[in-house]
Length: 104
Image (cartoon, rainbow, N blue to C red; front, side, top):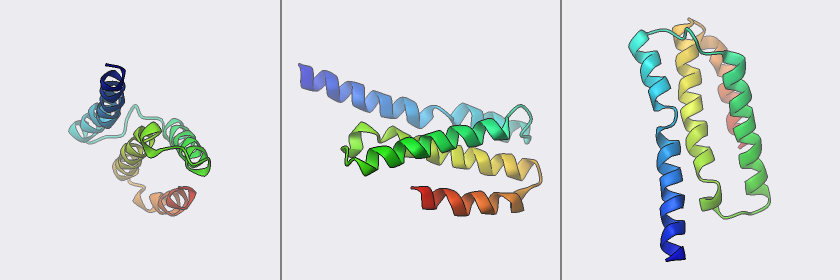
């Protein structure tokens, strides 16, 4: 019973995290605009996710205990690229894309 409940909680968390940013990404694509999305806020969130991911990996915790963070990071990176694209600053995205993978 406990193992089944733990399995359900783990995979439902991953499922929710996989869909967490999708409405925001969809709304941005539908509006063809980055209006209403704060770039500093998005970068701060992404930095926090990366720090936590690095911490978990450093201490050798099992991947399933923090698997939602790589999923959230991937969605944040997609969102960040769309923000730069719709603001007309695609070239400004290059330094971020060079720095963030090295943090992982």
